Amino acid sequence: MNKKVTIAVLVLGSLLGTCKKQENEAVLETTDLAPEKVMSVGAMSVSTILQEVNPNVIIGAAVNSNKFNIVAYKDLAKLHYNSITAENDMKMNSLNPAKYTWDFGILGNGIEEKNEKIPNLAKDYGNKRIHGHALVWHRALPNWLATNVNATPVAARADTLNAIMKRHIDKSVGFYSLYYKGGSPLVPLLKSWDVVNEAYYDNGTLRGDINLDANGNDIGSIWKRYMGEIYIEKAFRYARLAARANQNWTLKLFYNDYGHEYSTAKLNAIYNKVMQLKPMREGGDPIINGVGLQMHVRYNTPLSNIRAAIQKMKETGLLVHIAELDISLLGPNETSVPSGDLTNRRNLQKSLYYNIAKAYQEIVPINQRWGITLWNIGDADSAWGLNAEATLFDTSYQVKQNFWNFRDGLNLQLTP
Image 1 (cartoon, one colour):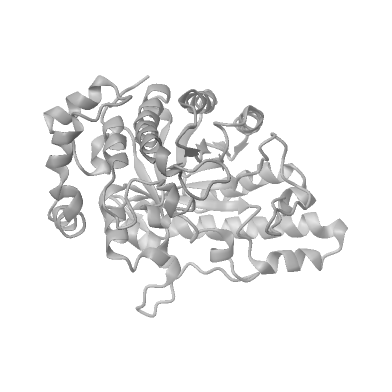
Image 2 (cartoon, one colour):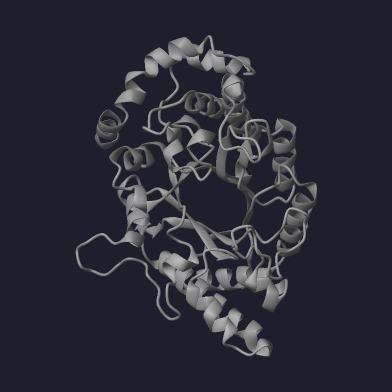
């Protein structure tokens, strides 16, 4: 308890110092909010620390170790979240930089290496849950992989990629099953992996053939291109086998993607795939446990679409993770918000933060909740850019009204 108080005082002077003022004033801020918000604020008994608000919803953040030199950034991650996702540090190009080389950051030289920083934060500040992101993706691949595949005869490329995939999954799942443990008895802090990430296009078809975007990046999938659709099932099987080989019996394995809320074709394709995988077993254990909805949404994304997406994934019977939540003020192709519409968009945004927290609780039973993970800490860190104002904290890591609305949505403590 003393550690938590110390962190709060040092890091969130602005947040905690203005808490009473925010709560008193927030009684007036009820646009599009349910009566519960006024009641919870009026009672002035709700925690100002996100991870403490609702015991039935774990609250996570995706973080980047490159930002750990910013004291406020790192300390907000320590204070508010009981689940940590590595934004980039656990992708293949970071962990597997050379064909037979894995960089988990442990060199034993007394200096904290890059790939130690996020698991160390999780271990040292409350034994936070770590959510692994991501084992198999068409992006963030190390340069050596394509070079190796292209040097292989076409007929042998499926086998080459299969070996690369299995080796990477074995090493990565194995390492985090054996290291960074907490609790009594000691168990791995890395509780889950996004095994396959973003396998589908928005039209519901699988990524495969070379498909260069405007920047010359291939948004097709080398895995599907040579291995076929079976690569998805194989990835999940290899992850479960690796977990079992390392006695990590409770590791949860997820399929993760975006667009559930705006593409019915993609939503249905994801549903059909996870339902196909759901009955499959390795050693008696299911090869898939959950589905992640990234939930990178805009201020004007219809709440009905969001609810329908959550409902569809809830119907799988698998764990449901809102895995990368942020809400942008920008419309498509916009780089800034028209000044005359800024206030309106901010109001819609903060209302949506409240209503997504509410919808998750209303739709997903407690035993299917894997929690809500926010994608990075403040607006300065958002992939949407500064003008999107997409997060809970501003560019100086000061609390925004989005924080209070999201907190009050969590505090409803609803069940379906």
